[in-house]
Image (cartoon, rainbow, N blue to C red; front, side):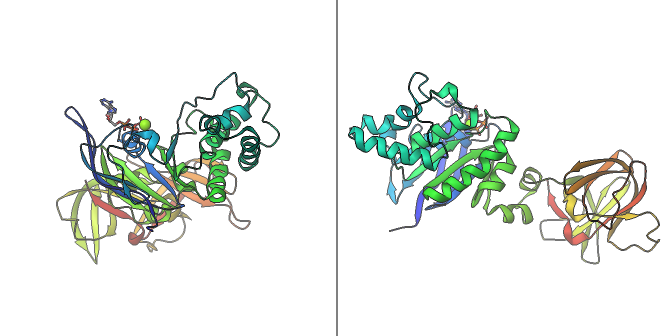
Length: 362
Ligand SMILES: Nc1ncnc2c1ncn2[C@@H]1O[C@H](COP(=O)(O)OP(=O)(O)OP(=O)(O)O)[C@@H](O)[C@H]1O
Ligand SMILES: [Mg+2]
């Protein structure tokens, strides 16, 4: 028995001239929460459809539970799909909706009822079985849609942006609930989204796609700390980004010129002098100092600036620091009792270590 539930091997799908999915290989571990993350149009839904059988790849193989399923119709694959636009039956009760698939496959009524009850417990909707879908909140309806799929005990549950229709606050709650539900039932989830925060919060592993290409697969922390290229660095998490040519190497650092600033980052073999690069520095890696911290530079990168704005988010605040020359950088400030928060108009110094920056060729 393999512990890989879904495997895509060199999958390619073309629509006419357009290569929607280009030579993508993915392995999804049994029982894991796996996300495919990327901007609109990058090929996420097309990839999911090749797993479910609603599209066939032009090239490459699809394996589910170790079996090659190319050419096998959707209803003969042990996968189930939850769509963005949920299609609950409006005139049926919640219980009837959840039990629908069991009824179709001829499960007797008493047995069905017991399993529906159990499923409603699992998705945190006990006692709501007699309601109609329109008597539930958006988040509750979404859980009914998920329950309706999970009750059929698929090997893999495919979720295509299922939180897309919900408002922001509800999405935040649902993220946590979905992750917990997946953990409880142990079913493999493949979740697609263009929202990086959703992917980071819920997933064991994330595959980042852009323009049909798979750029990187890794745990959320891995993608955040060690992005493979500038696209992943800019798409996953928040960053300050600068662009310009590498002018020279100095003490093991590459120096990028974003006129009139020089920014230092670690060198690596992909970075060559004269080449245009992008440099990223995460807001939490930047230190904010008072402008009288002294003239000796404490950091490889240190610049004077002025606080333009401070935005609170509970325990942390984001300070926007104007360095002049149309350059504003975001600094994450953790609130502690002994450090006063910066105020608008205050003169400050910002600094960060070259090793905390990431630099990639364009
Ligand atoms: N049946 C089709 N015929 C022609 N082109 C298609 C078809 N389905 C998808 N495409 C194209 O393939 C590309 C990838 O589409 P896909 O639906 O996989 O993107 P996506 O990543 O799911 O985007 P979104 O986040 O907007 O849902 C897009 O350029 C889309 O226009
Ligand atoms: Mg899509």
